[in-house]
Length: 469
Image 1 (spheres, one colour):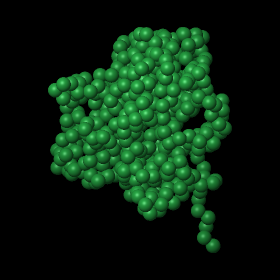
Image 2 (image 1 turned 90 degrees about the horizontal axis):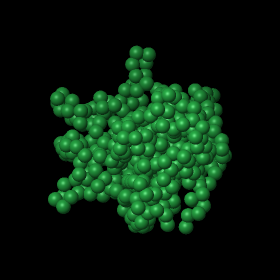
Image 3 (image 1 turned 180 degrees about the vertical axis):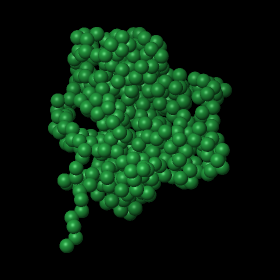
Image 4 (image 1 turned 30 degrees about the vertical axis):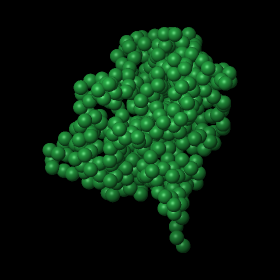
């Protein structure tokens, strides 16, 4: 009689499908990469090494580029010149354009209607698909794991390896399953789930691991919400965040430009739906979170695990964090005044995020003295938002409606705060200086960020949501 197969986790199944050379005690495994995404910041050095060694890109058909990190979110001037923050930023863009042309790589350039943040356009174009291995020279590549893909960030040296060989060296990480039981309260989002998880397990709680998200609250999330959660898994130290594909996944992908079509989609869907953790499969660690207990969250320190419910008070914090953030233990978060608000990034710049923010802004005005930047994640999202009139809601409220890009998330393009300012941001990192020298960052959901822009201080968004027209 045949032996019963050993139950496998979703991660194990994806890993096993892509092993070219197995891992040994002396060397990592060699994994084949199905999709390599590149942008202007982490690719120039890799291309330079390739050219020095006389190498060609092995699979340009599996490599796609976009311009996002250094690109301005303000329009060109009357001469057509874009307002790059620095000459280096402009050179980065020009270099990626040249490298893609030289090596026959598809590039979503400044005039391409498909351009946008790398982890936004991959899914919306259907490049991201269940079962794929996906890498990019960007730590938040974990975003694509929301589709049941094995996706992780790589360094510049590894970018060169993938360009040259379409493979990467990796040690198989340990696995964690984080189960969100129960249903979310009204007004609580995937961003709040992510911050609650990171606060629970710590910024190193998933160090080097693959986290699979499961449970009732996960299954009811939209694909946008799942992407937010997988995006933030890196802030718990994980290498990978992953969710098994289901009908929600198929509905999102059907009809997208690079997704299979017709019978090919039906055949792919059958395979995709088989990508799930087997009953009885074992994880190295299990974490359980009651989703019904989660409230809108913010960060108060200088690491994403310094997070707490927005309607609470500042707990004890490290001396470094207290000195930098100027939050006082025991003081209500609602007493902290806000200077800038940023709604955007690969974490929260999708259409549903902009709709959530618009629900707060509609019929209200940004507080005098507060600057609010709304930055869509892609040209497609910008067009869709404008078709719905969301930009008019933002502009009427006194917010700024910008062009797509990474913007204030990493502050490489000139969008940044001033020293000492408090910025409520829908991005993913609140490290010292992340959004500009001396800038104090508070991470939050789009609704919470928008509410702070209206109130002029940190505030629970739920009363505004209940009163929105």
